[in-house]
Each structure stands twice: as structure tokens, then as C-alpha cells.
Image 1 (cartoon, one colour):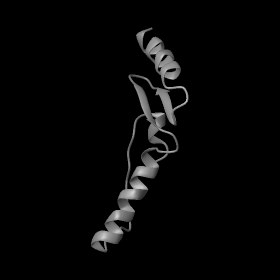
Image 2 (cartoon, one colour):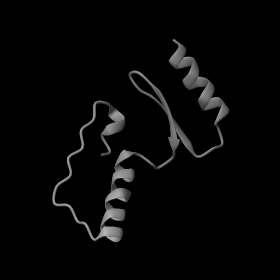
Image 3 (cartoon, rainbow, N blue to C red):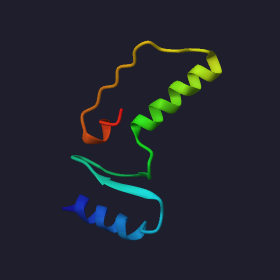
Image 4 (tube, rainbow, N blue to C red):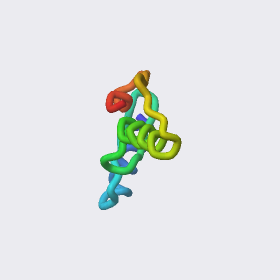
Amino acid sequence: MQAMELEDQLRTSLEGYHVDVIKGRDYVQVRPQNVNKGVFITQVLELLRRTYAITLDFVMCVGDDTTDEAM
């Protein structure tokens, strides 16, 4: 019940800002729109490539929630 109330309050309070409010199994998350774990990992890998000339053949990402799917 508290998580649902928090989600509603955040959605109302942050309306007009470019953020997503996401309620998961055990959390409520606020993050910038169009930014997810997949975008973050892509940026980290690009930074490694540019800065250290590192290219990876294989990356394994493991998650336990729907917010991890973008990875």
C-alpha cells in the first residue's frame, strides 16, 4: 500500500519533469526518461572503447526485474 501511495505522489509531484516513475516488486524508482540500464551499459562500453581502446567480445548482464530487460 505504501509503495502505491509513494508512486502516486511521485507521479503527481514530478509531472512536467522528464522522468519515469516505475514501481517494481520491492521498490519505486525515478529515473530520467529514455535512460535505462541498457543505455547506461552502452555508454560505459563506448567510454571504454574511446578512452582505453578496449573492445569486448562478450558482455554478460544478469538481472531479476523487468527494469533489467533493457540490458
